[in-house]
Length: 63
Image (cartoon, rainbow, N blue to C red; front, side, top):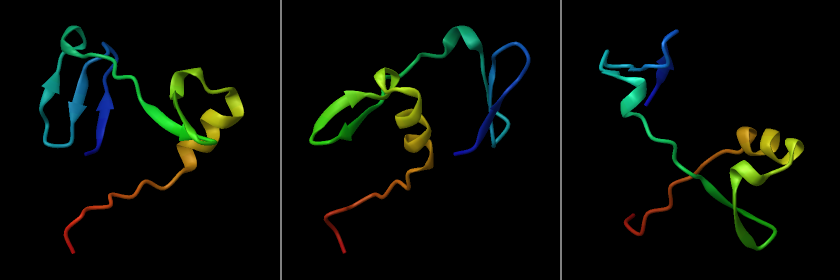
C-alpha cells in the first residue's frame, strides 16, 4: 500500500484515509543478517541502504 505524510506528520493512505500522527505507532522491523535476526534500526549506514534496495518475496505454502 502506498502512502505519504503531510506537514503535520499525519499518514495519508492511497485510498484517502488519514491516520493522525498521534494514532501512529512505530514498528520494529527485524531482518536476517549473516545467520541471525537483528533490528533494522541497529544496522550501520551501509547495511540500512542495502536493506532499502532489497526485493521482498512472499513465499506461501499454497501453489
